Image (cartoon, helix red, strand yellow):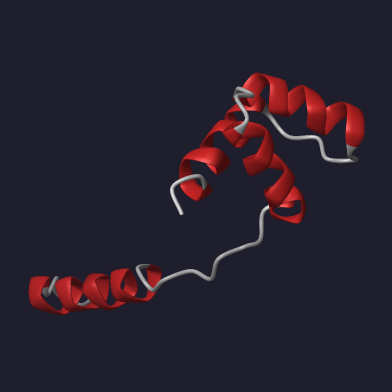
Amino acid sequence: MEEFNAEKELQSLREKRKIQRKAKPYLASKLDRVGFEILSLYCNGANPTEIHAWLLSNTNIKVARTTVYRWIQKHGQE
């Protein structure tokens, strides 16, 4: 049985974490397809709940209201 080598274990852990920390590619959101419409509604005074209702009734996109809210927070400042 091998003796425990802390330096070797630490180096192994750091190499694994380095691989895990690599930037992940951006995955396109379902909302990106209608982003212009979402931002237009938002700029004209619609709140995320109203935009969510619009998405359900006028598009084939089903997402949570919080997803709409987060998408607006991310893309509305551009």
